[in-house]
Length: 408
Image (tube, rainbow, N blue to C red; front, side):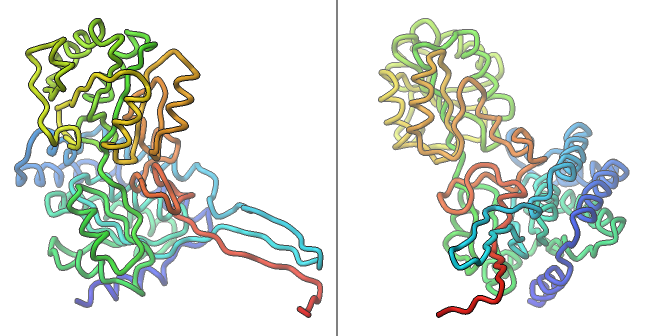
């Protein structure tokens, strides 16, 4: 398949140059998305019409005028960020007079493999460009028309800024062979980023011949501690689960302290039920609310990505931490409490990319971090963790200045 070598060669030749030009391209792309909003929404409507899936899946696929405006605003927010390449990371001078500097550099050509959410293409392209990278996109077949329409807007922005449109490319069709080509793209691609369901991520990690920056599933927990403020707990849990249940930052398991569960669990469940949520509860939760469906053996290891919440009553902080250690996915964990010491202990001891105190897990999003968007949520321990923004798509190199030194 000649597509990938040709695309990678063109992308590498078109790696963006000056910061001002990259920022101009992002602003122009935002303008193009607004200008072509009707075309993009029509393409998305065609994708939706051709797709079957549950409500949460369709929500991930759907674009609305508000979401499209958010994509454009995110690109403008990226343009307004400081240049991630215009920094000195460290500087020192050795006894022999040599002056060392560590400075950022782009990663190169990034391959982005994603599934249903068409906004991912714009966010990935924008963040890659901001950091001086080129990107090759391969979206899911269910979002093909939406992805192509957004890609056209991104390339229009590059042209208007005087940069080569080859810096942002997209697979020519929905042929699955394109994924295999990207996985085997050693020497063509510098990094692969999968963003989607567990099966996609595991396949990329198992088969790639290119370095992978991946996230595990978002099996996020919210722990309501005994010292939680009840009204806050109710509001935060409702938002964490039901704002958008199909995103990876949605809470999938509620852990509630036994000391407050009899009084606080019923109103939390009532709030969520009114929003259309279903439940899978452990025996202690069902002692309080016998009508709750019983949790099965796999339910506390399930990323629902839907309006379903697993519920477990725990005996304090240690039990909550123990549960998260076994069932968490290193993504995002939250605690609701008015006890600052307990909160700091929880945040220090969880093994997760993001820890949150007294707020919704759905704030685990690059836009909410001020990145303008994200290329994914990295849950590994190497290179980057949490929302991946422009700074996380850079590496570094060294510059050395001397005055004629020779090594003895």
